[in-house]
Length: 167
Picture 1 (cartoon, rainbow, N blue to C red):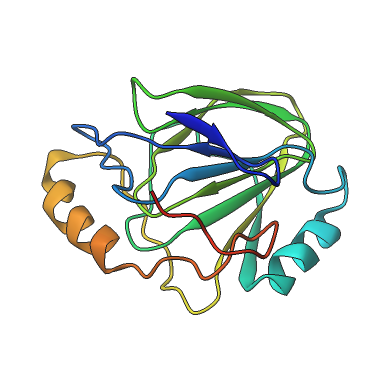
Picture 2 (cartoon, one colour):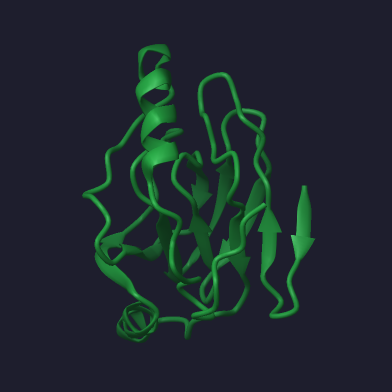
């Protein structure tokens, strides 16, 4: 299900999957053109201002994975990428330089194809645990569901600085 907020962000609610649990309450946020292309430092500064700590600069894995104990913001700094959200049957989104996608704990994501030179800045809310990395194995599900439920909601949207919407 897709909705739009007044600030232009797209909310994407992902249903629970067999392998990828997704988040039962919090939507994925998609902000188009939210950061200056080719300026990783500016994206990192924006995240810091809104209580999210930049943690890495790299790409996006090309296999389904999720973090059960941490929310993650991904700013596309350079290039473009097609990302599948929520597992094998989840929606595919095209992201390009300047876009930010915010993934609540449990939200599956996978790089389905990227331009050469893709650069992404990843960030996590201040005070959150180091993110685990799960892949949708059956033995992960019970522990992952407990971790998702125990992960505090983000205090802010890392782009707007406003409250993170709950479903």
